[in-house]
Length: 203
Image (cartoon, rainbow, N blue to C red; front, side, top):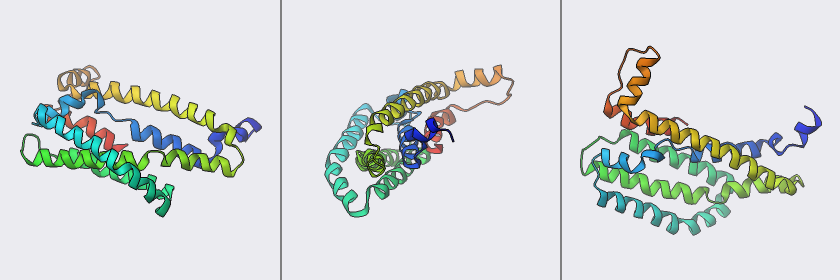
């Protein structure tokens, strides 16, 4: 390892984990088709509004308790908990049976509440954990560089996820692409609807 690499904050494991967490937590392939996805599962616009109000409310209501929880169990454990919650919330959507009401609504409601809980748990805890690592090493001045690096990589990942998510959601366009590259099988529309969710869960 040369001097430049050793001086880079990216050489610190906790900093690399912080950046990776930010990238994976925010790279949601379903964002470009967010509203359409809800409607294609059989939800109404009114239900969509209710669900996202529940999401916003859960973030607000859990923000302060999550801070207290960080003091109790530690920021690292809280960040891990937020990642686990995200996996569960995505799994609920992947398993939701399209069009089967009211089950779909309740699964999406659980997803929105868990999503808000994950946001509240991760909010500030990941940054504080990374900053404390730099502080312990006497390298607080590198914090601006760390934030700049994570923002750059997060933006790239977000653009890729948005573009790919929009592409694979359209079964017709996806099948045309598969045919173009010589693959002789078709993706059903119901499967294509789930692909952005499955990719997000896989990350």
